Length: 281
Length: 194
Image (cartoon, rainbow over all chains, first blue to last red):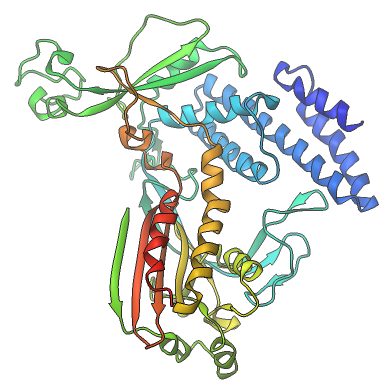
């Protein structure tokens, strides 16, 4: 398969006419040949193509997971996409039309905005020994192997493999190094995990879009909470958010505060409006 | 954004005389004009000297860009060297001790590293414009602030620089905030150029 044929096939990737697994295996065989020939430039190009396919594979996974309401698993796939695209951009800057990558990246960002997660449990790690993924040599600060992390060698990205490490602790953070470590509630007696988050906004969106490559976008506006938003509820009446608290002890405190209002731009819009919280009632 | 200025008694010798610097290494390090120094006692550990993850990358970047007459090194013997990864997505660039004569090089190389590594990548990412519902015009609020989700923030960095002038007096500047402010932060070091 020649480069032009690969590019032509990648240009149709959003049509989902072929298996991504088969395509990437085919590219792997071609890459192996280039590596044997010592053609680093072509092997790197094949890595770029494979990475583009990987971003699509993860995105399709995330989409179907969200359709089936597997929210946390989908969140992890979105995080993987972000990591994959960051690695790719070091070697390949795409425009808004190339290979539907912008659609993926924009969708990931928009979804991260509407996800209810805010706090993460993140580990503190001390890396004592590491080696190079390319040459397997142990790395010391004054005796590096010469391979640069993030560069492509023999069609694979160089990274460091930590061979000895200590976990120093776990902290609760709002802006974690990676976003996998979402915090969930666990029942101390039954050991059962509960997903306490409210995914109504995501459900709303996924009722309106059917396919992974269907156009959609998010518009965000800044609103201010007004007394009228809660109708004619009195201070001592139950809060309309159904928290079980009196209005004055609950949502009344939000009057005057700014909040985001999301509007989805989709092919088949709905008139339905929702008012949601981060957590389930 | 947090920018702190401190008077300090810290000099090159303060660091060269630490127990984690061997006698042989001390001779080599005394020729350096920029030292990357460890965080000490950040966490309880038998070896309490930590460098942030990414030090290897930043060190190589400096070595490749510095002119021959300037030298950078890590202020620790190889056997003590270890890296920490702390949960927060603040990119810790490390702690530096810089001779005044090397400031122009330090400023331009650190700025170019932050641009190459973080700012350029941030600029390629989709941005979300926020509209004020009452005026229908764009507002200057970042999506991370309005939604109260810090993971949507652009890259933040953290570093500290101690500048030692020819008379042995030192000043320390620490910064923690958006990577995009790097140029204006580093401008503060220009006045220490000798």
